[in-house]
Image 1 (tube, rainbow, N blue to C red):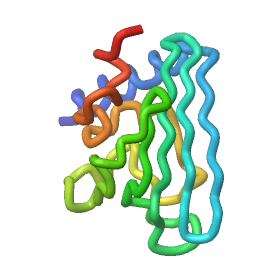
Image 2: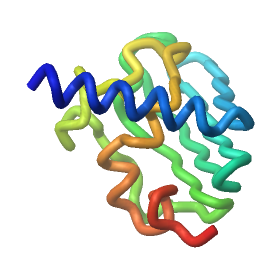
Image 3: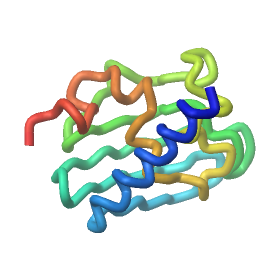
Length: 122
């Protein structure tokens, strides 16, 4: 298990290192957390809004999602606790300010058509 975790962490670091133009923008407003993942290398953009239990804390429900400018209103809300993605995953936002490149690997996001940067057409 430790080896798998180490490989996963190392691969996330490599993805971030290979994409120096990647940006993560966070907008915390009350009990919502807006996150924009923008990869210049892959030319791929994901925007999401998460509902938080408290101001900027435990943001485990995706209430809005857009991938490549296409709204995914039919896929939301996604309760990341019920989906088994959180807590504990490196993509889980225990604090809104913790948004990181590992969010690209969120299982619930990867499962949505058009939101998987690894299989999307470039």
